[in-house]
Amino acid sequence: MTETQPDVPRIVVGVDGSEPSKRALRWAARIAASEGARIDAVAAWDFTPAFGWNALPMGYSPQLDIEKSLTDTVDEVFGTDRPKDLRLITLEGRAPQVLITASKGALMLVVGSRGHGGFMGLLLGSVSSAVAEHATCPVLVVHEPGTTTEHSSTETPKEARS
Image 1: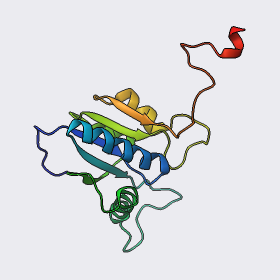
Image 2: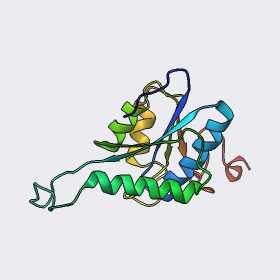
Image 3: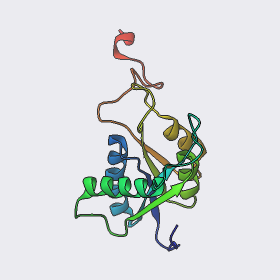
Image 4: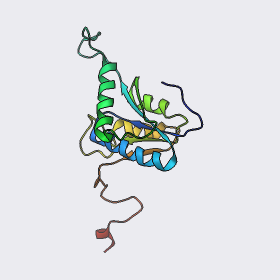
């Protein structure tokens, strides 16, 4: 990671290229503008040997792939109007642990409710759930517009009150 400026607050955003992570980037930009914070857009990659593979194919670099994916995602979200002091950071490791570590000392960690993979219909994915539970800074989980639970735990559904 690059050297940090301790006097400038930072907002860490988990980015995996999914629509929820793009919404998280937009929210982080709004919050950063109001708080005078910089944004660290963080993408994690992890090579887990599967199906008997224990080495990467010749010439393949997951690091380069994730760097390109992160850059493409940020370009899609902001175009040429990137927020001031936006940093693109790619780190090797499992996404929850990478984001928890990267967000230490941050003003906030912002993630989408679900990334690539997982089960459709879940309000929280495994990464958003893990960081919400274990991060040492406030966490904003950005849901898809219109995504709600049937009713809030503090509110009785209208039909049940009659």
